[in-house]
Image 1 (spheres, rainbow over the protein chains, first blue to last red):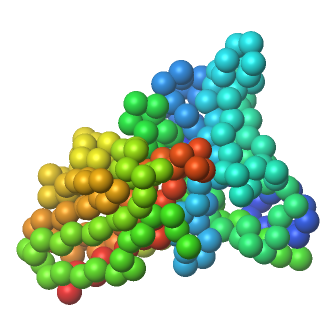
Image 2: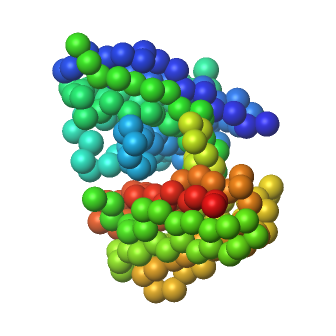
Length: 128
Length: 110
């Protein structure tokens, strides 16, 4: 049974880097049929897509995985994959209070074009 | 301000049929399939409908999706108290080159 679980610090100081990891069980992170994504939800607000990663990417151009980021966050976001641990990660630098949110990781089957499985989410607060 | 527009709230009585609308444009709903998610209080969203009108296994057939032009709808028939949740539409946006979500509709079962 597929499960995703987010992990990482619940409190980050302004201007520092938010780092989260999603551990996947029940499916391979290296599956060519899926993207893996991050979505966040600010308190009392709606859902905002952060980015997707697909592993493996093009063996010539993106051997570490192909990444796709929300343009509004692109300058601050990095996503990566660790196949040895079946995990993918999110780094968001130069955080402010506006980045306070529940962060979800999710699977996005290429054929379905939807996030079909989500982790429970992890709350990250940006505060000094 | 979400790219996709949903009514902030909807309501119905048990057994009733309720529809939730989602309005977009040619660069999103008009050119890509629509998904619907249900989010119960304090939990992660779950996928209800994908590719406009397909239900994942385990989703009751009381939930149905439709799309016409640049608008989509989620219909819930035989409304139950457990359907009280937030509902989000989503699709691909060509301008964003990524998924976009509606602002969400809070459904109350009276």
